[in-house]
Length: 326
Image (cartoon, rainbow, N blue to C red; front, side, top):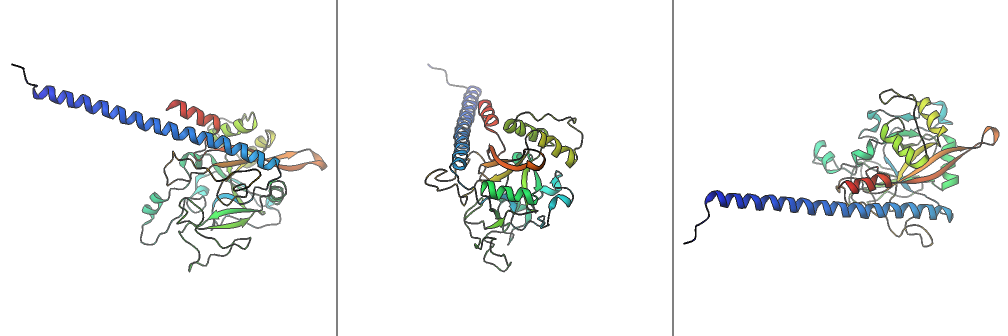
């Protein structure tokens, strides 16, 4: 006569099966994320090559994402913004909900917490790399003349913001903002904004450790004389960055950019990083260096393409490291 299983033995078998199942599911999840990140890495490299080829062929990189809200009140029109105080802003208050793009939102019947959770916007890892920077007259002109970046795209904080009773205006190029851009193309409204003196753009923050790592990746050595916990002034930061190649400013790649759909060079469509939560901005970030060339009376400002970050702020090398660690 065969001996039956005891209750303890059955429970032990069930527990072992549960553990094995958990490990299997975790492994599958890790494989899926690793695969998605590998696709993202391939996209990141492809975007970098495409931008380089597009610029070599004489393409104009117009209508990139500004990463600032359309109704950002920080912009200032002045004859020469270099004489109007600080142009780099590091503190967290300047990177608040009212300035940096957090995704489309419609407060309607939702409370602020629900909207913030639904429309998270720029990923926290990328936000930790960014600071705000105001273009001066020469920098704005150089971006237009050298890169063809005459207009940038901004997003409204309210879903389907135009047409509405809020009185949103047409873009600076005369276009009417529509639901054609943003985290959710069915909800976001966008508008074009002229690249001009005083325009606020996102830049890689050179006063942070992560920011300096990006500068090293895209421009050689950037070794600070400051200790990690010492506070930088704007003049100190600019002096060190200019010495090593120039400030890195950041724009997102969107469906309206002129590089998209170009028959000769460029991208057929905008690739997305699918490993991040859909609430977050999932496009790739183009970095441009504002470099001073020459000296004295023959010096000139030359904006040049530096490279591509993924939507979490990873360089190609950093993205490869993340994949290996999964």
